[in-house]
Image (tube, one colour):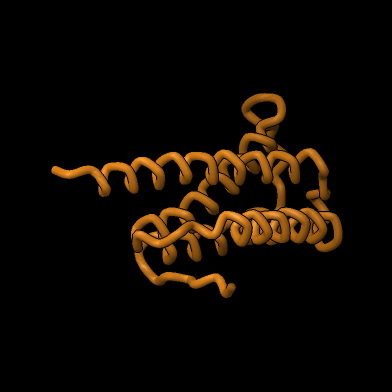
Length: 130
């Protein structure tokens, strides 16, 4: 089956977030300032992917449509692998990292889990008589 893409405020935010993510991961040079705490980059990767996948899932929830979990998971995996490869290949101040890719997919997994809980509770509440 073909994955439908809904145009609403959440999908538009997801597009903006995706562009900002590509910019920050690939085109923005890493600075020399030390991170605020160890493994800050892993937290940033987790948050970037959590927000990206949450916004996409929310665009389906908003339309009362079935969330394409597998499609979103494949998108996130391609984005994670592609962004790590691009960092390793095209930047001089960043490097590709399996740890970053794992953080990306953990953020994705948590976003999909949250989406399933919210989507499930909305379906339950909408099927209850008021």
